[in-house]
Length: 136
Image: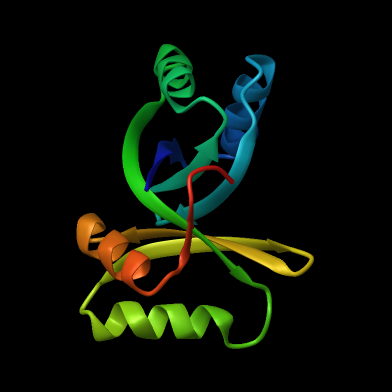
């Protein structure tokens, strides 16, 4: 099952991440997970949000460059080696991962994966009985 991720492109400028968080919060949109990446000129905040289509529209209205991307979200044990086993399965099937981010709470870890071949990734995860989730 695919999940929609919102990517917002930001100038490398103090307060820009806060502007995104504030705009989403003022509009009742919750950020379930996010990752911030940066280069010398710009940053990207990638997010799983409570309403991706509405968030996209709101961010465009606020003059941010945005994109919606399909990603895969999985859940696994928050224990040493759990993620490695899943990544081994994907690597052995030649699934290339562009990027990923994760968070854990208690005994459970949740991982957002952006593979180059989404369908192959889902097929391999399903065949190996990995816990693919639709909501974080």
